[in-house]
Length: 255
Image 1 (tube, rainbow, N blue to C red):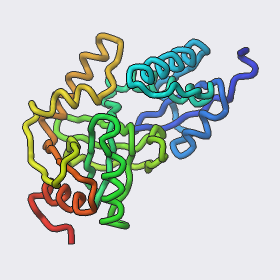
Image 2 (tube, rainbow, N blue to C red; image 1 turned 180 degrees about the vertical axis):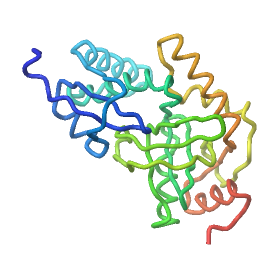
Image 3 (cartoon, helix red, strand yellow; image 1 turned 135 degrees about the horizontal axis):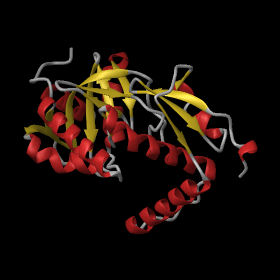
Image 4 (tube, rainbow, N blue to C red; image 1 turned 120 degrees about the vertical axis):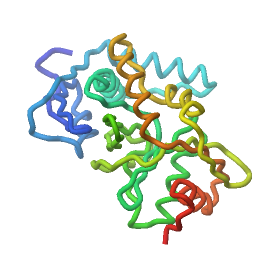
């Protein structure tokens, strides 16, 4: 692909950071439409054919490892993955992590559910939306950003929001992180940061750059100091939303 037939660059704002995107395909701008801005960029990312090839090979290896059919994705879609990977690589130096999980807000406070793929994060947050109605806002259903300060964590929406494309261009203080598991009965208990550490590390994007990875570990340590952690055993019944909410709010009723 020559320079002349690349797509037009544009800028997006994620977690209060403006990024210039220099894509190959027009679909990239459509994918990020809700986050476009005219503000000055802090840094730029640019995709090349080798980035697309890397994402295709990575998708193939993941499918084979999981025993799933190998999907044929378009170059334009694979470019969205390449862009998110470049952004996630840089953001730790701006005190921001890209996390794999589903964040929903109720009454302006965010709750992050994380688990191994296929456990039911999206199903559980759907139960919250059904229970709390207009009080609930879907921040991001797959890859939210977490901006980590010395004493707080703020969750942000991103365009990378899962197969159901559920996100909102907003930010909310994060109240709790909950590890979701399957169970015949709904139950929730608080766990120590140490018990949550391995899952935090697995679900956080880990940069290849050594200095950026060290900063990522520092940010995870800050998250552990500022956020409470829970483990939810969930049977995906509507009652699970009540159990989870009350468990993370000191048994306070939602009414």
